[in-house]
Image (cartoon, rainbow, N blue to C red; front, side):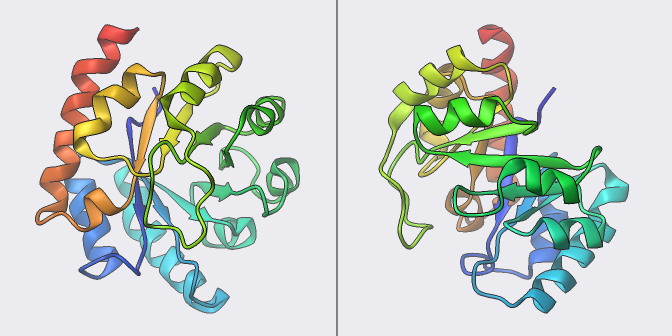
Length: 210
C-alpha cells in the first residue's frame, strides 16, 4: 500500500535541523519523506540528501529528492519527484531505475492523462487548496480534479497544496491515496504528533473508502 502521508521537508520552513526533524517524523510512523530545497546549490543538496538517506533508509523510510534525479541516484535515495518544468518522467527514469521511484506533479487533466501513460510510480495532483509554500503556485484545482483523476488512473494519487488536518478526510474521500503535507507539519508545535494525527485519519478513512 502506498504511504498515506508524504512529509515534505523544506529548510525554508523547518524550525529544526532537517535530519532531526526527519528522524522525529520517522519515529511517528512516517515512511515517505521528500527533500525539497529550491534555494541551495547542488553540493548542499547532495550532502543533505546523503545524510537523510543514510539515516532513514535502514529504518524503512523512502527518501525522495525533489527535481534532481542525478542527485537521487548518486546518494542512493528512494527516488525523485519531478515537476512539469523538470526532466520528463522517462528521462528521469533513465537515471532513477527501479526500485527507485519517479513521481510527477500535475495541475490539470491533460497533464494527468499524459502522466498516466508514463512509467511514473505515482502522480501528484494540486494545488488542491491555496498554498503559501510556493512562490508562484499553479491555479487551485480543488477536490473535483482529484475525483476526475481517480477515474482516469489506477496509479497512486498524491494530493498536494494547502492541505491541513481539518481537510485531510475530505481529500482522502475525494480519491487521494496519500497527502503531501509541508507547512501543516513543519510549522506545527509538535510535528510528530501532527503526523500521527494524519496517519490516524488515513487509518480510519481509507479502509472504509476501499
